[in-house]
Image 1: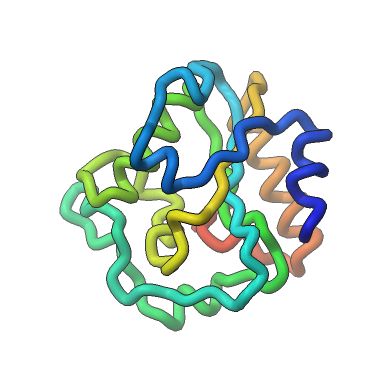
Image 2: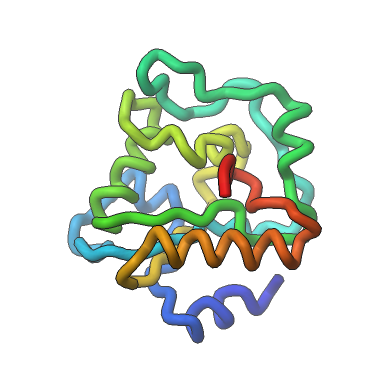
Length: 159
């Protein structure tokens, strides 16, 4: 797990900034306004602690929280990639994700399990500019599932 940042950098990922930084000091210049894919990483190797009530917003009045058993069943042991996402505009999409994590009613309901991690502010966000982000994301999730006995990344609910 310690080489994940190096591996992703070699694959063209950049950024590697904390969720806490993006939530508190979001800078439009930090993330490109380009199409691409992104990863949310948990580099802490300890067992995660889950919150009964996370910080995610109620998009369309839907409760973003799930029960502890669901979170435990979705957790992938010894894996730093906890979410794989796509965006036609990385800046806009990641800004929405951070706003959702701050409890705002924003359209980023996917990946919501992230906000029930006690250490969600310590997660790391990285991105890669790419055309055909939907196709690239699907391939990344498929590769992940292939190497993890059919399990998706923790917060990917489809794919």
